[in-house]
Image (cartoon, rainbow, N blue to C red; front, side, top):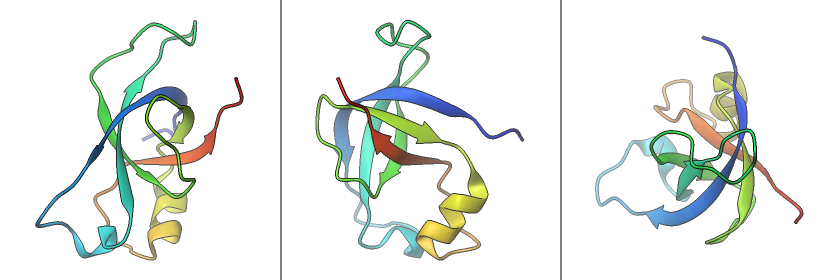
Length: 90
């Protein structure tokens, strides 16, 4: 699978009472991917691990690079696909 980098808008957070061990202590965001214009929704919202401290309403840069996510979470078996790489300047 190819690595994808895309801009998204944080529309919420997610909590779980039961989760994969690799997610312990990590903030999960609900992110709406944005189209090429940076404004239009592109597909369904998704979950992303956040190590940058992004907040509601912020635009973030996401990656689907599994190797960097496994390294960040220190887990070879994490089910996480999307990770926040940065917070976009306005």
